[in-house]
Length: 343
Figure (tube, one colour):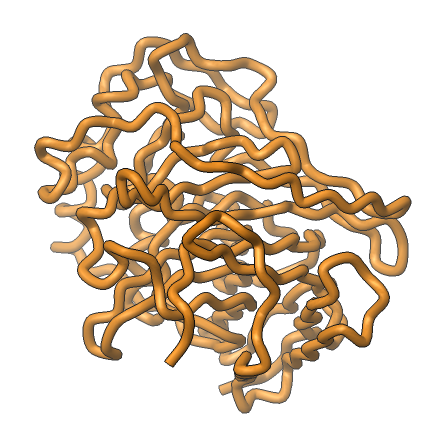
């Protein structure tokens, strides 16, 4: 079964290349999830169905579900960031960048929220159950996208992370693309906290895929803190579409920049202990260009202190290329693998 690749604005608990199992949902949990579904789905201004059958509700931007977070009770939505966005450049004959937007858009003053189902929340709960440097104010990466085959209970993702804090109470933000054999959703806006601003972003749409050994489809992803408000913005594509932000109130250790940024992928095993393919399904192959952002909004290359971590499953690998590659920006990583038994 092939999965659908979707955007992933979320708070995530894994990093590097790792694996984990999906848990089960009890009957009592199911009743609670039904209550949450009813609470999270708001009355829409407009509703439409996408080409792949997802129901999208256009919700008043100030009434979106993420604002139910207790720390955002008095939060005022920031409609535009005060960032000095830098053009990343780069012109590659065999590389295309994704353009974002539904064919049908929401009215001004509303944002597109995928209709939440109990099955969506079950997936979120299951995955959640299993899984001295300069201050950094953001991270950037260009992630190659592939359409690979996974089992019905496997999961594979490609992300960049912002993270700071002690191991038992770390503050973390992650964004990227993911796939799962359930074909029915991902984290995105299911958990309160991420404030959606763009009225046309396809937060749950399938993404076009690269051809192994041929043309590449990339998704440029940037997370950057607005130094005036402290909010962390998600920016996608070469057109630098400002999708939305994670309010600073959500984080104890990310109020003023971050100590660490990271790039990589995650693979979660199915019930049979077999991990899914990652990247193109070859070892290693998925490509990311790496940069981080300083207090002045300047894009900088990773330092020599970059650490490399790969799990011990032997089904994935990672290669880190510094200035040896004759490419713009100079710093790249490749990672991924065919998957296999990894327990």
